[in-house]
Length: 337
Ligand code: KG4
Ligand code: ZN
Image 1 (cartoon, helix red, strand yellow):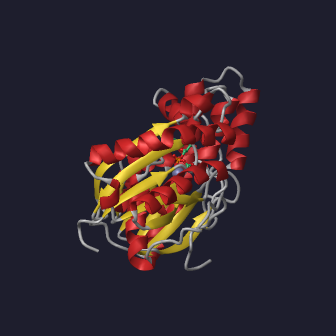
Image 2: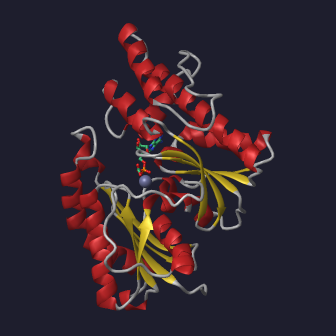
Image 3: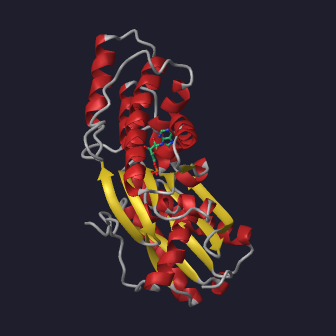
């Protein structure tokens, strides 16, 4: 594939309506993200029906803006890629249907992309000289995984959460403390004013393999706050966040050592967390690994990462069939699963 390939990426798996144009696999010409967070905040979480209706209204202007900002015409694109899973089925359908309709209208190939594969590509998109094998710590609202990227499209699952995802734990703790939604950024901000050593919360499964468990930690926070109603929210936020980051990074470092990885790379919405970002960079100073921490806007849901994953999928698998449907439970094709 030559450097001139231009892929329109579309992302609508949850509550962001996003479109981006990428050339050559790593040059972002435009990346538009329209967040619905204000629509869902009053309900304390994403309401699927509201999300799909909002996507329906936003998808056309968001795609149009991405094309205009990139200075590209639809018929000149090399492909149109859309997330087809995992995610909310009604939301996924909006992006997949739009992508197929435009692909037919403009006579360009359609590519269905796995949302998680998109997250895995965030680091490589911003830093194309990263070398395999890479350890990617993928931490989002719905997933927490340690993945060995052995090559393009070749992934080995090292560990994953056995219950709540890391982002889910942030959101649930924030909801319990009545802090608002989404909880991750709010706890991140509060934690800057708190003492992370003030409360010793458990580090679940710290020395026990590569899987994670955050449900018990969330319960420990809730139990502590119930017994200590006057505790400062800042100290709770900082101590909870420190426990999550300790577990994530201890396992990521161990995995990188075992695999002989060249680098540890963060991905997913929780990778926007300040403490996780800072301590990942510190890890690079104290170990032999490189650490790559993508920009915050590349960690949270966006369509540039979807177009980047599509660039490599197009090379290995070619275009998708137009009867490919939304698949809310789609999994990554791990070599060991
Ligand atoms: O990847 P993402 O945008 O959507 C999913 O695919 O899930 O991740 C959203 C998750 C939410 O749980 C949100 O609270 C969390 O990422 N998040 C954060 C931060 N920013 C977003 N968690 C901790 N600290 C942050 N700064
Ligand atoms: Zn995501």
